[in-house]
Length: 327
Image 1: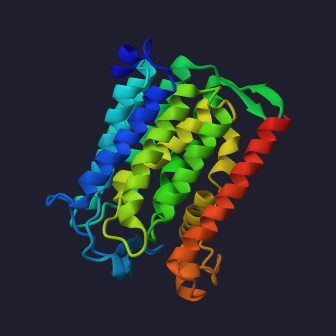
Image 2: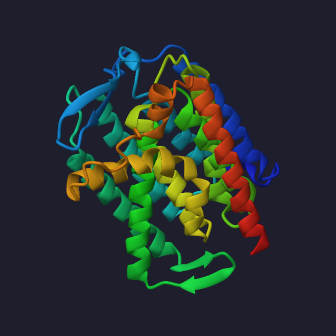
Image 3: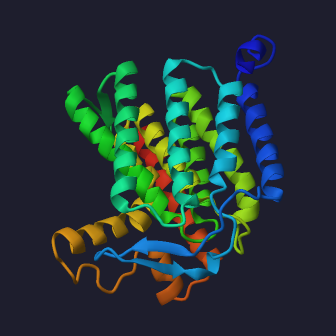
């Protein structure tokens, strides 16, 4: 909208920059006094392999959660106003809105939705996202200097796995103050620096989300006042996978999201091994998400945990940049 009105009068890079600054300011103002309708956190709840719901982090109990339903719409509005729009972009914005809404409904529910319900919803949205991508792009991929052409079916299956996994590992990593938001900001900035010439519009979309996340972190840094909930973390996971696909190097996700994959993904693997393969001793002495292991068993303060993971994320983003540059 505004992009088309401004592009002939100011440099194009300045338009989304204005959107990022405005998004930060609006989000900061909105989160100063969270809306009364937002739910209160009841502590971090997880489902054990035998199906029981337990609270593992009662320190978050009573805090305002689900504020993803505040900052995600700001991000979506800034994208509509300050980025060039097309059919594909509008569909993805709509799917991210749907992802936010399903996450918020779970946040606001008095009884946590079951893993099956959330998994199926994520799967439907993931399929829609990958089908949309394939309608506008080829199924060619780059892999460390070598180009491959995958069949649409193979790409579709791998793309859905990527999208679904990204949504869920990001969500699982959102367990301590500042972790998900900080690591996401680093990752979105890295995608922009590495791939802005390949996917300028989507790279700037990552910057717009990073901007509102920075405002969110002003209130989420330990000790936090608000929590993003599934409404925020699942939307972040969606965009991370989308950027990986648009970069033309979808496997770069393994480097660019290493913290989320290890911290949240290993927990999913552990639960699957115990529940479906009956491997009761799988990772017996390690608690996942790993940030809980660091906090509870190793006694590392939350702020230090976040800084450690941010440092790791920066290192692997640099490795991704080197890999793309060399090949």
